[in-house]
Length: 79
Image 1 (spheres, rainbow, N blue to C red):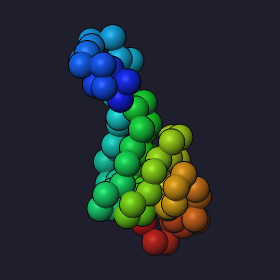
Image 2: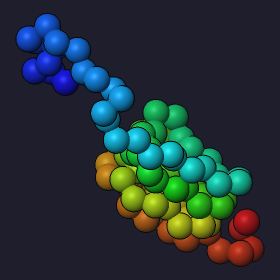
Image 3: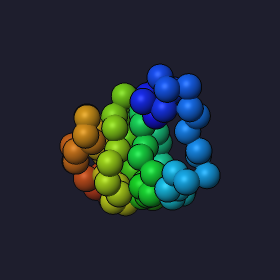
């Protein structure tokens, strides 16, 4: 993109690959978290603030960081 802008050309967004992001029921997404294209956040999962999610997040887990990594699973008695 940057090279196109410097050469006074504009990026053709029609050619950019797209995939939906899926956020399941009960999931929490922290402020300023970034979810990359095609990622699914599982049921009841928590994504920490400022995290960069590059892979699918399993159900009932907590992830955080850049890239987001598993912090812990949420046990049944805490759901």
